[in-house]
Image (tube, rainbow, N blue to C red; front, side, top):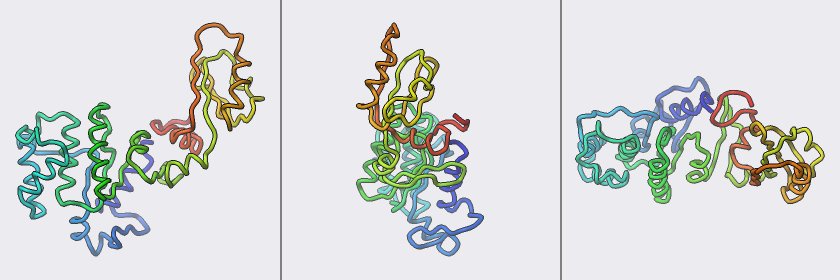
Length: 270
């Protein structure tokens, strides 16, 4: 959630902040002794990037390419990688939010980094713009670029990440592949509309927890939905009106809530 320490951690990896204690090594190097080398080997896309808004997209990429001693050919390649070839002559001030994020990504790729760090690269973007960024990052991953990204979107983590780290209040709570994390958590979720209180489901087979998902809607965490569902339906059989029923596997949001008592997009207790 906000305030968990994600940006602070990423900025320490990027060399922007200095750790209070401990050490960070990238490719076996540290920022104190190998700053210039690390700058040439990593790419960085910050939460917010400021541009010279009167330059066009092509000019912006060529300017950043010059900082690394790269020419127009590399700027053109970054333009292509960021899917901005049709915006080459557009002034930065006229770009949409998604196009600006793609430009920031293109800049981060100018030096052909081995490691790319992205801090919430799709926050605030509409679903189409978000998926456009996902496609670009997926292609980079497939080419062998290592990506480290922070995100509030669990779908984004599931789409892009081989390894997931869940963080809260500066502490790492879970670390591993999604399948292993969810397998260790175990169980399934049943949600159904009902006037009954969560406590009335306490005798349900394999019940792990019962709570209100919303007013008039109960959320049941069970070991096995096939065994638990008949009892839940019998308990609510006499109720009239349309009732919405959802049965699903646990996902990463459930894992986070179970471990911390907080939802991924909220800093308040639940």
